[in-house]
Length: 113
Length: 112
Image (tube, rainbow over all chains, first blue to last red; front, side):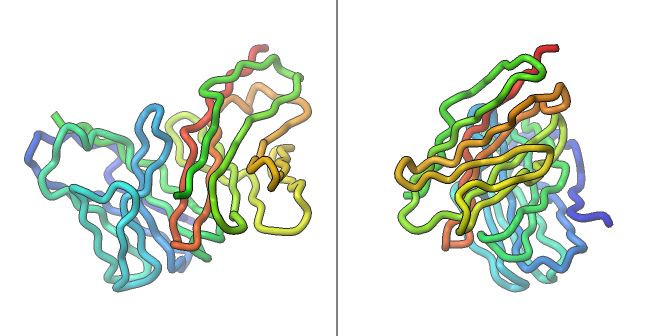
């Protein structure tokens, strides 16, 4: 089983560039979410979705967009990258939302110059 | 507002020694509590979770955690640490708004 797959694993951007981090899961989970992990900050929720067509903001949504057109995919878009968005990004899914185990991807390390 | 505090940034223990990692949470309702482990360069893996019932929960890899409502704590324990337990550990709470809140993590070093 693939579980949660994130691409790319590494990316370097220049300030102002845009990009999309891809996330796909094959477990038929309704709940999907994006986190950023920064040293000393733990994981902070960016956006989440409880099903296709439904998205909502988390703790740190500014500068990021998401969409959920299918159950399987939950891409994260950076429209105009800033150095403050240098981080490791994790996608995670859950069968039962906030009451269930989160299954994480392996992460995407993004550097914005 | 919901929050999770892990007061220990870094802990060093000798192999075979016991381990306790502290977690305190702030949440108005009955919390859904989790412990995750992260090995270097990897995503997070669930160790154990608490929703209700017995306040002592068992997890994978020999870990256990005790929920204490009066202290708003959910500390993780292991009787005898192995070198392979060296990793970063995160405590998390799931809120009714379908959001998860993570602590800042505790990094564990195991000395042979």
